[in-house]
Length: 346
Image (cartoon, rainbow, N blue to C red; front, side, top):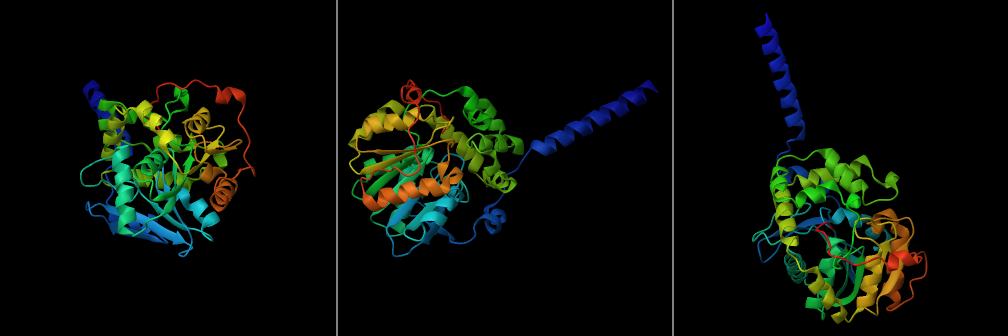
């Protein structure tokens, strides 16, 4: 009788473990399964000279000045939809899913460094025959946009940095999403290739917003689904491994070479890349204009879309303009916050 009870208990434990494992183990999803859900509207797939298949949207005013938008780490071109809605009447807006992100997925050569991302954008612009444009980037994409401006100054008419990477900063470890921390751990990150709780993705999304009402189930589902796109998790692991050895000080030292007009947009409550970095960008790029938005986090183009887009419109329409509508200055302690070695989270 005791043996039967023990055997029954063991069976129940194994079943419980199986349920737990099944609930967190997530296999890659093929692009075809995700296209119908996330490649709507202006979405198209463009084959680049490197053989990468880029998910791209080319929308807005087809005869207007071109504005290229580059998303951040573990995001997708969908993050720019609010700006497209606000600015598409005037500008031709081109957005894309970067390598290892969204519906672009893993690319030939597996180059997920900042240089690799900038080369990808350059390939795409060449394929689309776009020769001159303003470029904006958020977070990781801000670093990519800044590098693109340095490498291709003849193509870039203006640079917009939105809570951008590229400045070594001090971060509160509690503000960094757990998924980013795990991605930087060599052994555990390999496990995440197959194990990805939806709750982990939701925690990461919520940490970039101040206003939690902006975080919808639909948004979390999109981030979760696109993270499961075939190859994206492995690309993320490789990217964070590369970030660990990146010399951010050397990159920041080059920012003074940027000659075009620059707008730096920031949320004053950004915990991932604190607002002190906005003032550091200003110090290194003297001609830069600042637009700091109160009670906004890491993605002001989504959290305060009308206000941040208005700052962009003013900047682009007047060149080196005073961006006064909406933004306010951060407190002195934010400006004076020490600049230290950065983590790999962007």
